[in-house]
Length: 298
Image 1: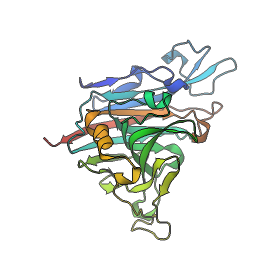
Image 2: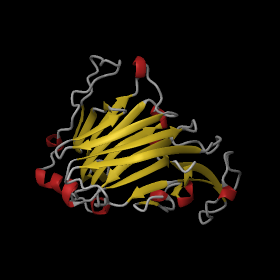
Image 3: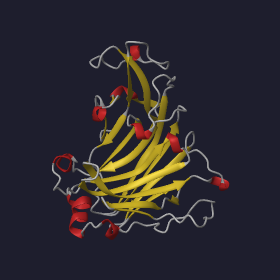
Image 4: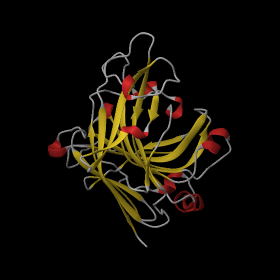
């Protein structure tokens, strides 16, 4: 593994049934990095997740269902104070179940801790989701730009001001799953706007959220684009829509850097994200990473 990347160890991620283990990162023919996700059946929360308790079949009575996956993180290597482009070539080998998610993303050095604990805060948190692929919507590429956080009094939790991008994969005018084939996911930041691409095609904005009372859908459902999908009225982001001032944006992109890459999978645990049933078989899932390329202007 390159010296500027690390396979993380995160037990019970966010208090869930999913743990990230370095052993779930491997290489295929010394060529592709492989992220592996699998089920474990354990007798207690303290039992280590190992090869010996891996199980594709449902866990038995008296056993707890847990999952392990891999999470690769780079060192802080992206100076978001300057224009950049990043490309990730990846292939999702889906196991056929609901509740699976692959994420290829970036973060700045700010955490959400203050925003979570202090309703008056407005931290310069930054997150750039190059891809979030949900197995419940196999043909859709989701990307998003998160710029600063706020405490939602409606939800009694933190939220981010965000542009959500969406593109339905419709080669030949037919919706087609993004799993099982190689695709190149890309992000560009020109110093003003963030743009996302799937195999060279722009992923336009779907909606944006500025605060508790402002979520605006910008999809035009009265017509179709050249591939047969609904077009967006905001192909490029307009940060003025998020009510984030220029000073805050400078903090998000420039002061809270450099940024780093994260490549990982999720086994969903929140009910609204349709987690897999513990009573169904759970075949191993993998995601292959061919390369991560970064182009940075001096």
